[in-house]
Image 1 (cartoon, rainbow, N blue to C red):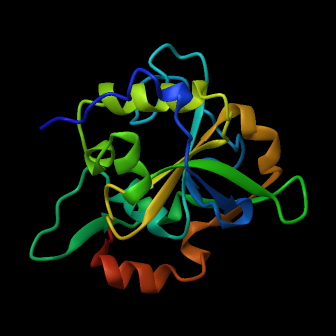
Image 2 (cartoon, rainbow, N blue to C red):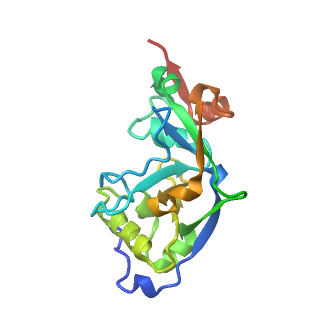
Image 3 (cartoon, rainbow, N blue to C red):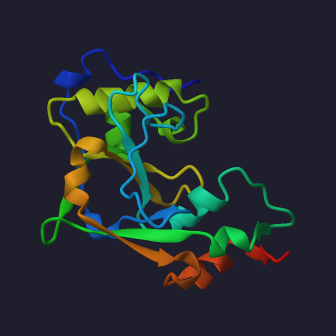
Length: 200
């Protein structure tokens, strides 16, 4: 059964939320500037169909590696062969929040909260993205004016990911760029995911 759209009275429903520390967010990028980047292309899971607001997708740890590098890959004999350039050409981005101890208030589209809203975990896996995008638009329009959404990672269903709405951009503060090859915990993450670096 496909994902149901958000209920028509969504604005009247109490929206469950979670607080997430801004300094816990992680993004992987090929650039050394331009973060936080809020896309308006209507091509990703929780993008605005009408392109009226932008979205910034983040992991809460190095699950961002799986979301970015393994998004369209399949393993062979339990191993992902990833080109060396995929690591050397990328940076991991963290944010120093504009306020000390800065937090985001996010709509909780996971577990019991999602079920009570009328959704299910196909919101994290369904393609095309038409219905998940309707959920994003409903959350964005909700009178609680949350900063974004926390959802289950499609790549790693034991982890969670975040999409931040552009209206919360000022809260993210200053971005810090670190070469992915120097990221703390990268070796452990590669081992867990079965990533083997393929050299030219």
